[in-house]
Length: 225
Image 1: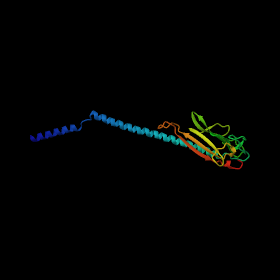
Image 2: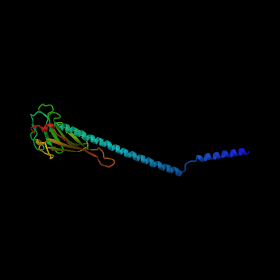
Image 3: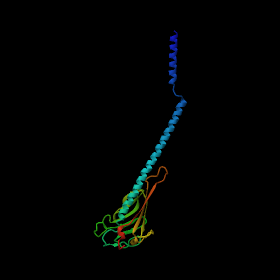
Image 4: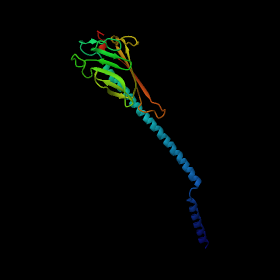
């Protein structure tokens, strides 16, 4: 009997301990756990928002820089050919705008636009496509665009969008003082500024990128200019 009583008490103790081992959470513990969970979720969400803003910014910067490089590369390559062709035409002369057209060279030297002629096919005229070229800015759909005209009568064609500024400086053979005398132009400094399509989410402002290059057209260095 003593042994059986001892075993019975042991079984009851084990049952009692099992019940205590699996007791539930209190309301306070649940509220604390929920509060900690909300803090963690808020922290993860904040990191996600910051990363998303930075990714958006970097994508816009890449497009903005590509636009500037594309515009500069295209203008530089074509302006380099200004005045190319047979010498049957006189070299352009005048102040800002050529007064002896038809002529070969810079036909209009404005601060925000440039026009120049060349004879690509050597047929003695520069009225063919891509032989009387103009670069300037215009607005299309509320966006400022770098435009290109391939002839005097052609319509502008867009080169790149979101160009906030385009500046040309016309330089003589030596020195850095700009000239408006077409016959004295030997170098053209091009400054193009592009901007992002949308405002930066971190600052609330547009981002800008400026690119400057100096082009020395070979044909403007020849005798007769």
